[in-house]
Length: 241
Image (tube, rainbow, N blue to C red):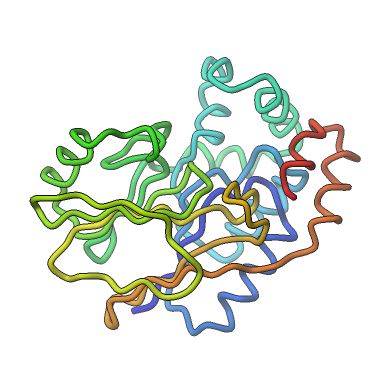
C-alpha cells in the first residue's frame, strides 16, 4: 500500500489544497494526518472541512489539545496563544466536536502515528529527545515504523537494536532498511521550519520499502495576506517565508 502522511497544516488552506492535489496525482491508497490542523493560519474551519469531507484519519496535535484543555494555553508563547484564542472563535461547533474525538495515537499496518513522540505524547518534540530516551522508545515499540510531526522539520531516526542514527530527510526517496526500526518526522504542510518554504509531506510505500519526501509549492502571498487580514499575529505570516 501507499500512504500519504501529512502533519501541521496549521490553518493554511492554500498549502493543504496543493498538497492534496499532489497526493491525488500519486496513486495513494490512504491519507493519514498527524494533527495540528489549526493554529497560526487563517483558515482553520476550511482545513477542518477538508479533513472531514475526505474522511482523513487525524490524530491529536498540541494545538487541538489546547482547545480541549484551555489551561494548556499558558504552555504556548504569547503569539501562539493569541492565535489559538482567535482560532477557537473561527471554528464551528461541528469542528470543535470533532476535535474532542481525536485520539493521541493510532496504529495501522504495523505503523504507529503520533503527533509528538511515541507511544502517545502530543507535546514532546523529537529534537529534544536524548539517546537514552530514544533507546527506550525503540526497545519498547512493537511497531517497526513510527511517524511524528510537531517539529515542522523532516527527520529520520533509525535503530538496528545496537546503535541509533538520526539525520534530516531530504527531498526524494529514502530506502527503508527492513532490519531497522524507524521514527520519521514528516515535516509540515502549513508552516515548514527547515529553510525551504514549500509544503512538506511524505509517501510511504510499504511494498517497495521506501519513504518519499515531497516538497510542494503554493501561493504564500495569499496565505500571508489572509493571516494579517484576520487579525492574527503578523509573525505567523512572516514565518511562512
